[in-house]
Image 1: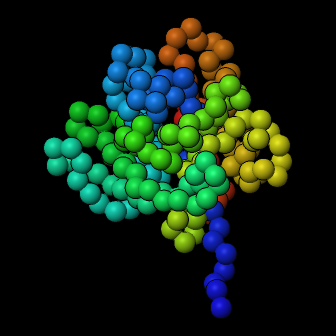
Image 2: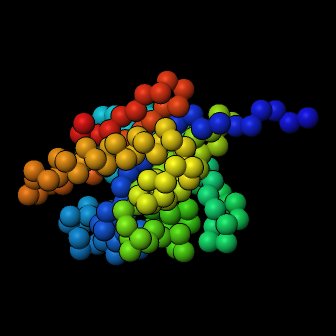
Amino acid sequence: MSGPKPTVIRAIYREVKPGDLRKLQAESNDDPSAGGGARDLRFPAAGFDTEFKQMFTRGARGARGREIRVATIHYLDDLGAPQTTTMEYWPPTVSRRTEVRIARIHDSPALGGKRLPDLEKGRVFVLFTQYSNGVVRVDYAYEDELRKPGVWADEIRLAILGCLEIADEKNSRRSGNQVTAQGHYDFSTGLGYCHGQ
C-alpha cells in the first residue's frame, strides 16, 4: 500500500533573460551584463537564501573548499522521460554577501542541452518546485502557459504573473538596470514573495 501522493510545498521562480540564455549556452564570457564569465543563475540573498537552503539540504565543498549545498534535481529529458542530476547552490560569501547562486548551469542537463528554453516562444521562467517527499524538480514555464488555467497550479501561476506585472511596471519607469521578475511561493502558508515589490 502506497502513502499519500506528494504535494508541492514550495516554488522558486526567475525569469530567464537573454543573458541567462547565453550563460546556459556557455557563451557569456564577454558579456558583462550577464555577469561576465559566471555561468550561474543569481538571486538576491535577501528573500531567497532561506528558501533555497530548504531545497538544497546536503552539504558539500565547492571551489577552494567553500561550503556549498547540493540537491538531487528531478527533470524530464527531451523525450519526456524522468531523469535526475545534481545541482549546486552557493550561499552568500564574504565577497558576495548580497547574492546567492545556482552554479554551473551550462553543465546541467536539467537546464541546458536540448532543454534550453525557447525565447522565441516568449517570456519564460525557470521554476524550482519542492514536494512534500523532499523531491526537488526543475522546469521551464512559459508565460503563455501560465496565462492558461489548468497547465500550472493556480497558486504558482498567479504568483508568477503578479510578480511579472510588478517588474514590468517598475521597468516601464527605468532606462537602465531592469528588474527581473523573480520570487517564491510557500504552498503551506499561502505566502509569496516577489523581489522588488
